[in-house]
Image 1 (cartoon, one colour):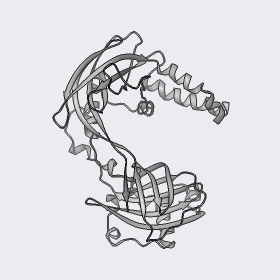
Image 2 (image 1 turned 45 degrees about the vertical axis):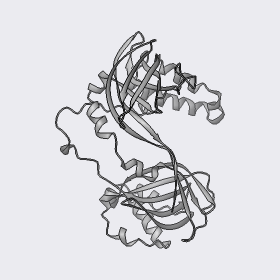
Image 3 (image 1 turned 90 degrees about the horizontal axis):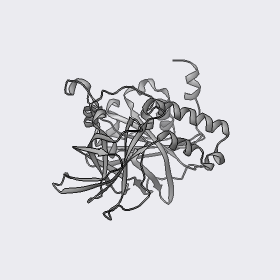
Image 4 (image 1 turned 135 degrees about the vertical axis):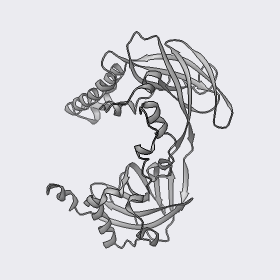
Length: 340
């Protein structure tokens, strides 16, 4: 460790608010520690943490993308987390969540910033609840939520009601249905969902997406010039292009799918080649996570909601056919409010 690191740890807050509220949901307990105000306002919650399964406990053999996707699909932990929240209301004071981060406290014996936060909260009057005092740090994670547009921390008393708005979430269900996609052509197929119902799907169109062209058009938007300098825009472009080159080299394309479903589901397709491949560490992974296709129309040819999916496997611009799979579908769960 370098002494330079201690300068950040030693920083003092402009203000601290202790909340100290425990929430019980199902068989799990969560604890809202409090808030700090520094360069921005942040709210802290201690949550249960389940260590991901160790590789030694997983099935042996080549760990290709199919196996990894199956291992990482259907985890309930993230759905329970307060990282999914969009708003906290303390009495009549509304706090909009701008972003959040979370991580296990397992290694926080070396994270002096987290330890200092707990010490500062204790000095501010935080009382650690009995159920939490002897809990192993390996079983806990600290969630930090950045709160938007706060110049002064809100008032709070233990009698004050807290209302938490949870953002919509998605449940994942694996299908693994083989399908051949033909560029410029439509097709239909069906599958049985987790309720045992037959779901009819219609692929209206399969298109090639020039992601480099789309990226160039994005950074040419006048709204960027209103918010950033030319140097900043160029820096963002260079960083984006560097990542893009790793996943979809210039001259290559992605495949986009416009589809309808007889149920309100979101479909996720992958190429057969991708599912068989062994993952490689690449900078382009960040780009893959955010590619979306939004159709120009609200409804398709069967008068059902028209949706889009991007198969993020680079293909040549003369590609006409792709062996693929409907790997999984997602069911959106509505946002909901929790009264504490």
